[in-house]
Length: 195
Ligand SMILES: Nc1nc2c(c(=O)[nH]1)N(C=O)[C@@H](CNc1ccc(C(=O)N[C@@H](CCC(=O)O)C(=O)O)cc1)CN2
Ligand SMILES: Nc1ncnc2c1ncn2[C@@H]1O[C@H](COP(=O)(O)OP(=O)(O)OP(=O)(O)O)[C@@H](O)[C@H]1O
Image (cartoon, rainbow, N blue to C red; front, side, top):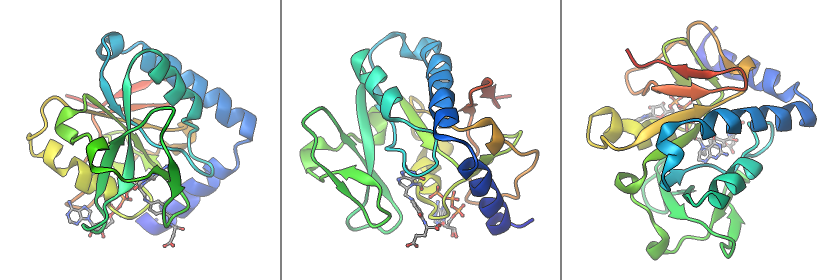
């Protein structure tokens, strides 16, 4: 299967889960996440606003905020195509759907949290393999976001993919620009692909 076929098949598997299965999965993922020593101290966490059949993040985001972490959510970059900006969010954040129908915080420059100030980046994904290679929605948004980290320029950033177990495959075909994830959390476990 090529990337496009794989994406279609993995999206269908995710779609087949019931809303209850998705919520249960999200709670299990939150439990693994909360066991990370990195989260013992308040930190800046890049997260995402889940849509459609993605691993739900509403409760997870709320729980992280309640624990004192500052969340930053992605907005599509207004000038650089296929790039993301991460904006601080709070209870007063005004949301607006982007061109993909994904709610994002209304862009205010003062709310921008540069990647260099994030300690954790929770990454949505469609599929991942046993080496941490990631398949996303196809825009290359996170590959671009993670390029500087991959090049060693964001040593304090820890990317973590969030997924259902059915999104794990043995091998994903990967391209030069793909940035493998060091860790992925699914309901079953924390996958650590480092060394
Ligand atoms: N919740 C969430 N937010 C996210 C992402 C994500 O995967 N999940 N992204 C991760 O990169 C970025 C947005 N990327 C996206 C890329 C494609 C589509 C999408 O629905 N594509 C449709 C075609 C839409 C069209 O071209 O009009 C499709 O593939 O069917 C959605 C988000 C940033 N924010
Ligand atoms: N660092 C980069 N620099 C330039 N182009 C890139 C980069 N990363 C990805 N691309 C381009 O983005 C396109 C989409 O990439 P890909 O199919 O790997 O996206 P994805 O990882 O599935 O999506 P996303 O990261 O948005 O969830 C590719 O055709 C590639 O040309």
